Image (cartoon, rainbow, N blue to C red; front, side, top):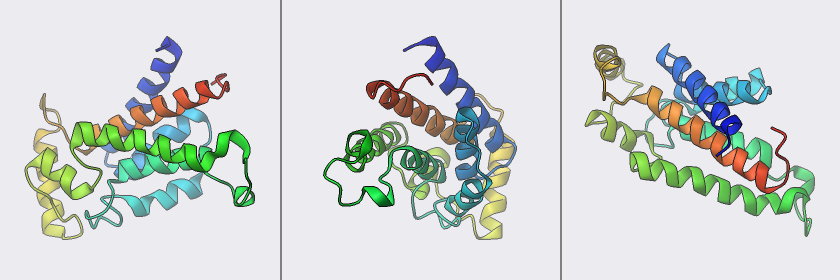
Length: 185
């Protein structure tokens, strides 16, 4: 891996971790780290990603917000465009097929590290149990747990998930760019 690529994912991951550590939503912290790294900050995308926080609307039973942000980022760059639908050979090596492979790579990293891409299951792995974030009492409990432990060595929490999702997304994105011969990034 090149030093330049390593530097990119380290910086993006550091930013996402910092935003989450400061209290940002998982989905927004991750997308912000990614967008800032690539100079394509878009407040509408940032705002839209707020809905993916905590397993979508903090319901915890859907995809992790950090995972969703990584998928969203890859889709923005390599998903099919409206005008590509129905073409035999859309630009960029049939991106409809390619995006599935990129998402699978991110999915596999989540499964390897956290055992799931679902918020509730990841919480169970991190905290020993899930917390229903939309319940104020449950939210206080998880926030207290995090505040008491977030600076303890070995304590893994959502900021780490944001960091990892961002790092993995950059690695996948950069590797794919390189495979297309687009690596000026």
